[in-house]
Amino acid sequence: MPKGIDLLDIIDILLVAAFLYKIFAIMRDTRAVVLIRGLAVILAVGAVSQTLGLRTIAWLFEQSLTVLLVSLPIVFYPELRRALEQIGKGELLRSAKISEKEVQGRLIREVVRAAINMSRQQVGALLVFQRDLRLGEYIETGIRLDAQPSRELLQNIFLPPAPLHDGAVIIGQGKVLAAGCVLPLTQQHLASSLGTRHRAAVGISEVTDAVAVVISEETGVISLAVGGRLERSLDELALKAKLEGFLSPARHPFARKNEGWA
Image (cartoon, rainbow, N blue to C red; front, side):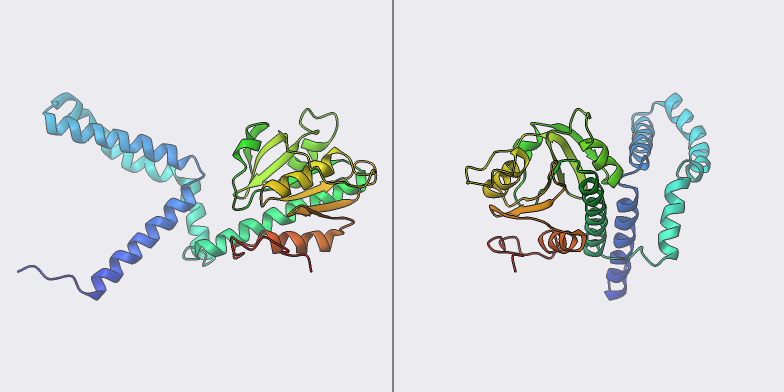
């Protein structure tokens, strides 16, 4: 009689599943994904050839299988090294929530530094953060980037005469999703010193739950719009604190009204 599944077997399966999930998560954004797909195709062809009795193809597959197994560590060397480094740092079993928090923290740091640099140089800019409501219709009006956020990238986008400097940058899912985007303008009465960027920042915050950071080209003043309201003259610490509050992964999805306006 075969032995039944006990608690240790379940724990064993769960640990293996968690380990494989983390390995796949590490490889998700690397070239390893494409290589794994190619390897899966080769294995599928070998299995089909053996099942159908295609002896020549099956023989070639058997001869190449050893070469494949030997070459895999070489091909996947960067990914294996990355995985071993994370194991050494104790990061392999860290939760996805912590990872999301780290990604958001890096994003905010890069945006804040870019905003401060552009403020000092009086470079006009409009940065929109997607939250619970997707901004697909506005992303489609610009140029898709899907790029990792960095202060250099953001500053280069808005530095005249860059072709995308007049539009808005939309940020979401830890990435710069698009640039040169067109946003709706608010119908509120704003001060005459506030231009189109400020009207667009307030406008997008009125029709969605997005958070918008706008930098004045004339004065370099940094402002933030959320829920149809505009707060001006933010310094580095204030901007960082506001963004951390609005963009926190633990923020309740329906906490929109009056949030962060202490």
